[in-house]
Length: 137
Image (tube, one colour):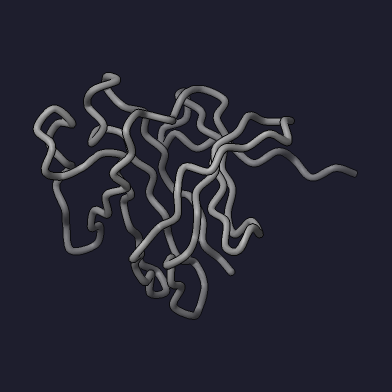
């Protein structure tokens, strides 16, 4: 499967949950349903991970399509305004109670406990995604 994190953005404040998001993209040739997928957070090099929750009802990513997953709730004023949607990028809300993106956090999209995609947050990167490490020789 070719699902990948293409953007990770930390919240502007601990209350403004709709200013924190990740963008997933389907680089594959077949549609991908996120129903039943989970998102875990951990630290690089640590086996300890926390499950943020299960994506339900989820959404289907068609080949080449992207989806922005916002941390907060669209109906909660204190979570801030949600980012503008475009024809190419829609919002999906996770309804989480607090921000989870901070420097060094590793996000993993899992399906039935198996990793589908993984990315590390790097605030210095233009898209917030740390460059993949060089392959070991």
